[in-house]
Image (cartoon, rainbow, N blue to C red):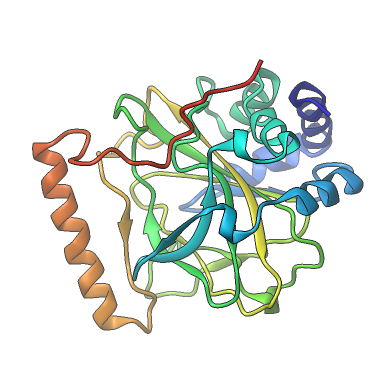
Length: 273
């Protein structure tokens, strides 16, 4: 199946709940978001799961900030995975999601900067953080995070769930279960703190992700920031270390606009026609 066919399926499914999704996103959440369940035909979602690469075929990102596998050089993996990722970048999908979220000039990222595939095994995690405010060239604002989950039978107790922290780390997060065939979309701005809870299951959490960008920031008061991590509420010492780390990296970016070292998390091959 090609990306245009998958894109049509995505549009048809989202349109069924368009009014409700728009209302949800426009509600008073400090971190606007919505979810769409049963996004694609179940057999297609199972096929994506079965084709997902294993951790040894991906890049391991492991530090006190995060512990996960990522895959972004999509020509190394089964073509259906690439077709699915880029289906979210087809014009009709981007325009529909832009309409729902109130971002008429949303732009997809064919380079998959920080996007692509992610896999998390038992005890892996992603600490609370703010995404980098811009694209790889620091020309466009990052405005939306799209996460599509493809591990069957995933439940709350498995861990590995998306957490958003609209009231900060002093209060409980909103937990969005990484449910099979679920699409979660959230706004990204300078207060959109989010995380992935540690995986407790022996199964692997598998996610297909995209970011949308725009010439305008999601909020008028947004300012440039690097990806900034925090400790979880119980990680007091780790939190201080991570805050100091973020300040140091921000200082470096004030001097070196694009950083000292190029971020390797970019798909340089580009989009297939």
